[in-house]
Amino acid sequence: MELTGGRGADVAFEVIGLGATIEQALQMTRRGGQAVIVGVPSFDTMLTINPAMDLLVQEKQIRGCWYGSSNVHRDVPKLAGLYQAGKLMLDELMSAQITLDQVNEAMDNMGSGEIARSVIVY
Image 1 (spheres, rainbow, N blue to C red):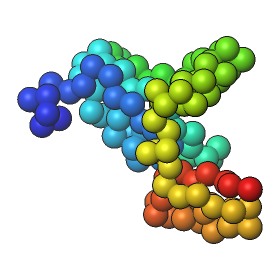
Image 2 (image 1 turned 180 degrees about the horizontal axis):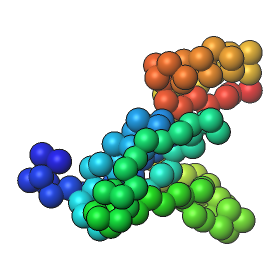
Image 3 (image 1 turned 180 degrees about the vertical axis):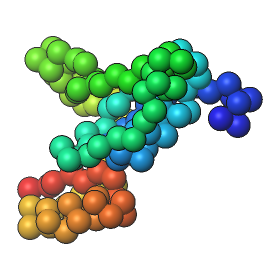
Image 4 (image 1 turned 120 degrees about the horizontal axis):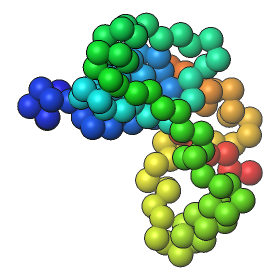
């Protein structure tokens, strides 16, 4: 809120998938603002929001965004081509490269917040 002089963001993106950060994204938006949920929370995640104040009085919105709301048949090949051409920087988003036998350890590390993304190399 400090960055906006207390006004709040027009749009706040939540990309981790944690209940606390989803709630934080909604709280960071201005009146009429929008929280876009990109991160995939566990299916038992519940939110604590005040619908009367946040959704009605403040006119805020919560939106879901599955796979970037893209057409995967069209967009994944395009993104792969951009990556191969060096125009899409994905390597910088990778926390670790792991082998298949390290998957359980990597899942534990992601769950604890130690790392964000792992790529399996086989």
